[in-house]
Length: 347
Image (cartoon, rainbow, N blue to C red; front, side, top):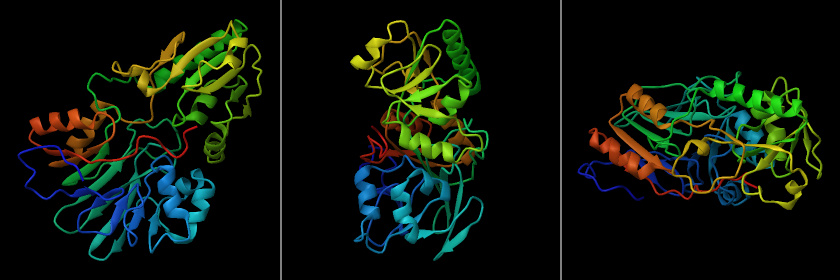
């Protein structure tokens, strides 16, 4: 584990890094394979690296049991099916005991089935959140829940105070208007997105326009759509996009010669990173729509305050400067080393 230097380092932290994020004094590891005898909590379908999935699905996975919602397993596809024999059944709001600890899954609002882990017992109540979204983009998703806890662990992807998200529903409405105006002008529409974007939400937003998607995006999009009561119809891109159609294209593939065939296209970048002024790599587009299913700096601060915690563990993104700012407010804040720079489902 690597923690930031602080006058509070002498205190024992609630969270440690051990091939995932572990809770001190428990056999729990979050979003990583952990130790061979651990109970592994998987917060969402985007929480694990491919190498972590391999450890958790192979036959020599040790005595590890897995804690995850049914929706998360479904979104993991074949990997989720391989894990099912070792999964402890659990749903939101139904606590169970693990030795002297009381454990409960609560909604994080990040994806369908995405969960936070609330643990009571021992010296302090702990809340592992990872990624969460205060204003969920899925109408059927239970809003993110807050519990009082002494220590919390959060992902800090958008923790820079310069990153501000407009109201998400308003941005989606603006995206719908942009796509439909382009369609009326008989232009194809290309939306540059990341593989972790809420792809089914975007497809539903531009309906009833026909939507196509790059092949790298389709497997996870199909699994998301399967959880949707009214799934959007998305077609695999096959070198052609007609005027008035929408194409979902992975960021990083934007200079592909295949797109040069559509010189009159309308283009947009749909991503939380579009709101990050420090982001150096940006696609050249007509419009940007800064929308994300992860929390902004302001949402993270509000969440921390509502938990009443005195300790915050952070990883990824702007973790170090955010931890420094929190220490300035008197909190015990530290950064955990984490290799989660790339997710399982990236193209």
